[in-house]
Image 1 (tube, rainbow over the protein chains, first blue to last red):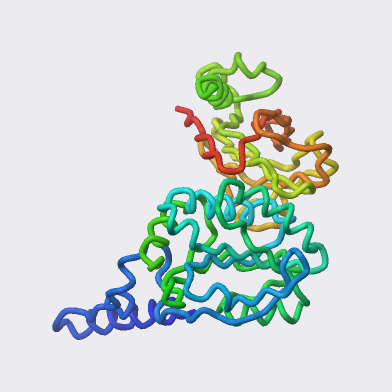
Image 2 (image 1 turned 60 degrees about the vertical axis):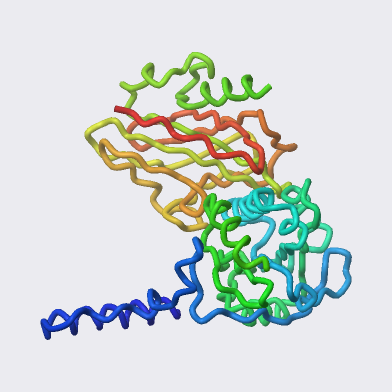
Amino acid sequence: MIRRICLGALALTILAACSSGSGSPRRSELNDNPKVGRYQGFGLVPPQPRPSFTLTDTDGKPFSFSQTAGRPTLLYFGYTRCPDVCPTTMADVAQALQAVPAKIRQATYVVFVTTDVKHDTGPVIAAWLRHFDPGLPRPFVGLTGSQAQIDAAQASAHVQLAEDDGQLHAADVVLYGADDYAHVKYLQSDNESDQISHDLQLVAE
Amino acid sequence: MAAALAGLAGFAGLIRGAVPLAAAGPDSVASDPIVVSGAYIREPASPEVAAAYFTVYNTTAADDTLTKVSTGAGADAELHANGSMTVTPGGLRIPAHSSVTLSPGKGHVMIERIYGTLKPGQTVDIELDFAKAGPVIVSARVIAIGAPAPTAVPTK
């Protein structure tokens, strides 16, 4: 939404410049932000603060997202019966982690939150995640909860709420940095591991 | 081992009909109306569902439509295309002298209720039914979760 508003404003600026025929068009706010150009993913202006929500991990214990504070964290909402985007995304994330220095790899949390609370129990999510994180020092965190909890978690992370038993969901991977802000996210990942590993190294400290 | 895998990848580049895997070369099928290339399935993380990806080339001067998909690898197979994760109504149009690629986020053949397990190195036969060209059998290679996707071989 932020992006659309900015692009709309840019279009208006260009139109105004054309009709008046004087001066150079103003640069868009997106390009004026010096932070955006650093990232290879989709820059977030303004940065989004790390949300706080508590869900249930795959062992059935409460997991507060606040416990990832100060650590680089990749947050993703999806479901295990997803044939296409979710496994591709998780594989990209795993590949990105393999490509960064060991210190960052050890520090980074990957948190997967299911959007299909009816099907995805703790054991189902755990079995699914273990396909992606072998060889990584920190196992991926899998979370579930009530529908209301999942909805609230998505809202707090500025991710569009999933519909249709969680099967129609946003494909955003949000990267929170050590400063507890998300400056960048990734959309509909199709081999974006290079971008993720590039940006991860920028926000890890 | 790496060399053996690379060899397999080369053979899997272009496959059509019942031609044995090793006998199918990029030039041997150029006269066929429909050529399917770069077919693969990423090893599924879910025991229930997998997705197959490929590129379909229509070498003829008339549009064709992929109307139906089927496979013996699972109880159900559905065509999801145009970025939608539901069955594509009316099938997928392949314009004349053009290609359509199903890739993550854009489309796939969804295989549901998989029989057994799908492991890297296996191949899965998928029948693609076209309105004009008729059935085309594709052998999709199962690749590891972290493996790069094979590249489709373009036709002239």
